[in-house]
Every structure is written in structure tokens, then in C-alpha cells.
Amino acid sequence: MSLQRTNAMTVDVEDYFHVSAFEKIIQPSDWSSCKPTVDYNTKRLLDLFAQKEIKATFFILGWVAEAFPQLIKDIAEQGHEIASHGMNHRRAATQTREQLSDDIKKSIDVLEQASGEKVLGYRAPSFSIGKENEWAFELLAELGLVYSSSTYPIAHDLYGTPEWPRFIHNRPEGIIEIPIPTLRSDNKNLGIGGGGYFRLYPYFLSKKRIQKFLKNESQPYSFYFHPWEIDPNQPRVSGASLKSKIRHYINLSRMEGKIDSLLTDFNWSTVQDVYLSDNKIKPSLLTQSSS
Ligand SMILES: [Zn+2]
Image 1 (cartoon, rainbow, N blue to C red):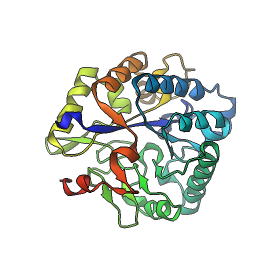
Image 2: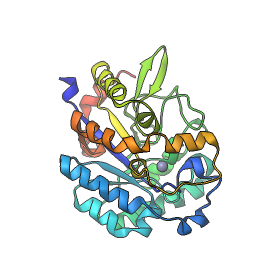
Image 3: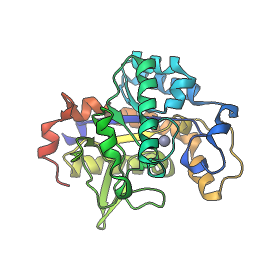
Image 4: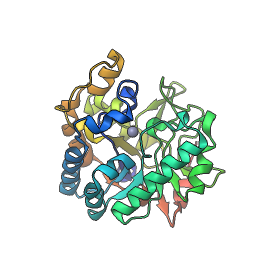
């Protein structure tokens, strides 16, 4: 029965030149001269979701909403949830309180204007809310947001808070946090949330891991990926480290087929639909939480 559970499908809407892996070689001032692919690829995703009759949550960069307001309108009109991924993909951890507040507020304004929808959710770029900037949760509450999905309880070289809760919880600052899902293995948390890991591993293995999560935990699963991940023909960025290049380019040509299978093999909906009722955590998820 647990395998029939509805899970949250999320897309972090940003272009290949916004990603943290390339932040040292492409500055925000260079973005306008990069060939954008986010509009085209997000539309392909919208078609795929429509075909499978799936609604998703789109965590969108304010930069994308400014460049492609019609795209945001289309996403909202097709019944998907509009949420914020910040304005300029600067990691929350590298910004001062004032900078981060401006960044998120601006993104909410531009997304609400383009979509006509109220923004309730935020995902920090590269899951960059951790112990050193827990104050970021206070900001999110101040800005009127309801939930965040900005923490990844794993050990990773770029992000991660392995000792933080694995499941949805109320933060003392008045924000609901929905961590990226993990699998317990050898006393460690294994990242199974999507993106790079999903591209790296063969689909049958990812599927098995998600099934294991659903069997072991009385929680919904949530998945994230990016529009550029289904585009093997995206312009190549030169000057990045080998590690960054491998992370960004590995198995791009297989991703669309994998996503297609994933959409078919599990049930999906928006974050709001899966986790919240009346802007609060669904009681069934709180009482069964075992983190
Ligand atoms: Zn991102």
C-alpha cells in the first residue's frame, strides 16, 4: 500500500549557466550573453507532465521569471505550484541577512506578479541552509513564506546537514521544513532526492531505492531535478574543473527517458498537495514521523 503513496515532484527552474558548479567561471553579469535553454526545456517538461497528467512544484529563479514571464504564467495556468528558488542562485550561506532577504523578497515579488499565484515555498540554491545560517529560517517566516525545502541531511562536499531531521518538521522560527529524502544505510544517510545521483545511477537502482524508502518510512518521497538535465545539446561551458564537468554533464542523454519512467512508476503531485493542509503539516505525517 505504501508504494501507492503520492509523492512530491519538484523542478528547480534555472539554466545551465546558473548552477553552483559553474559559479566561479560564469558571473551573473555574463548571464545575459549566455544562450538560454531554460524556456525551451521547461516547456518540454510541461508537455511531459501534461501527457502523464501530473502536477508538480516549480522552484523558480527570479532571474528566469524576469527573462521569461510568459513561461511562469504557463506553468501556473497548467495547474502547477509556483515557488521560489531565490533571485540569482547565490547560495544562502554566502549572503548576509540583508542580501538574502532582498534576494528572496525580489524573487517572490516577480514570481507572484508573473503567475498571479501566492508563493508559499522556497528552496535555497544548493540546499544552502545549514548550522552556520539557521537565521535564514527567520527570514523566510518574516517574508510570509510557509515552507522551505532547503536542507539535505547528508554528508557532501558542497552542502549537507547529516545530523538534521530527515523528515518534514516545524522549525522554531515558524517555518515548515521539508528535507530532501535520504535512505538509512550503515548508520549513514544516503542521498536519494534526485538530480545528480539520479543521473549517475541506472534507473532500476534509483527505482529500487525509492521503493525501499516508501517501504521503510511512513513518509512521502520527494524528487528534484532541473530543466537543463534533459538537454544533452546544451552549450558546453569551458574552464570548469573536471569534477564539476562530470557532475554537470554525466548521462544527460539518458535523463529524459529516466524521468519518463519515474513519472509512470510512482504517483506524483505538488509539495502543497502532498505535505500540507491549510498551510500546516498534514497531521498524519507528523504523528508517523520517526526521525
Ligand atoms: Zn538550483
